[in-house]
Length: 152
Ligand SMILES: [Zn+2]
Ligand SMILES: [Zn+2]
Image (cartoon, rainbow, N blue to C red; front, side, top):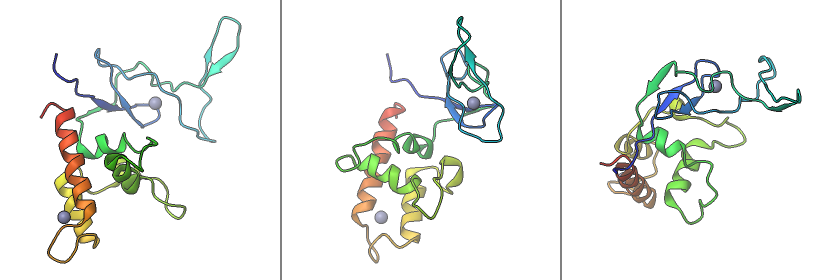
């Protein structure tokens, strides 16, 4: 068995990026909180709504998205090991935003490969003059981890 490439797709209902099952349908996922959105619930035999599930769960994605470095990195942003895992640290640094800017996702950034991210960091002044900084090493390591995870 080779490593499975995690494919993602755009949910036709909530427009979130959701992982796709082997049979081509979207994994079950919760509906993101939207005060204006319709209430979608799963009702058990007892008539109790126990889960707010997105109506796009189990459906075919609107668009199947190939796994990119940006999407892969974004998937690490929720981990709690940033203090010891350069990949998590980088993911949170690139996607978490701060109290002044909302969290961003893979669609909000203008890079999709590790090489492009590296260029962006230099453009924003992270690299030393004419050279690379420690953050560049994180990007390099994340790029290698990503290549391994997609079987590259
Ligand atoms: Zn959805
Ligand atoms: Zn560099």
